Length: 217
Image 1: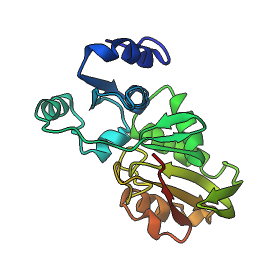
Image 2: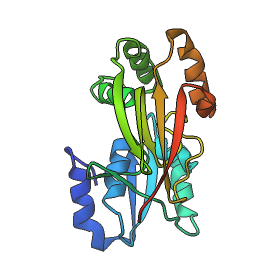
Image 3: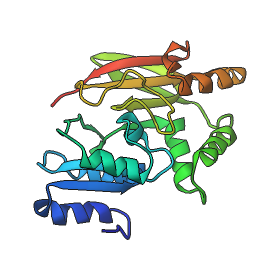
Image 4: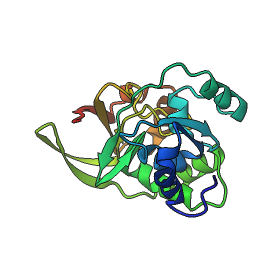
């Protein structure tokens, strides 16, 4: 079934929930998140056939990024896995959520007329040095931290998408969330930070901090 408008996929899932043992999301990260979060605590098995450019959750799960490979994986599965789900401001999410520059880029990308990695990279380069750094006050495990940060990300999976590993240590079923904060940095440091992001070494930067959050079931 094709979704035809915003939140239509969620309506389809809720209407058909009792009729199927397996539901497959065919789409981009937004569709995957919308369908997956509609299946929370149900007995229905969730699968993904990625058709976007980022495909963050699919990449984390090592799902092949072509229809044939993804379908073969679904047809050959032995036992479904259970994964953690996170909630922020009353909204559930499967992979990552945050505030700051990453959210700004995601918004810009959602309004762009083209998709793909090159569009994503172009938006980052255009917006990086015009984005206004924000002050944050974070309460983490009974500790208050004040900082100026470019971005604050809560990660359940290991990446934004496109193999941009914001939280390389994250796992989907370890009962933990990880909060990654990126502090302001000199403009000349940007290429190295981007290099670390795509090489699973972001946490080695002196401008990046990780806090482990206990997930409450």
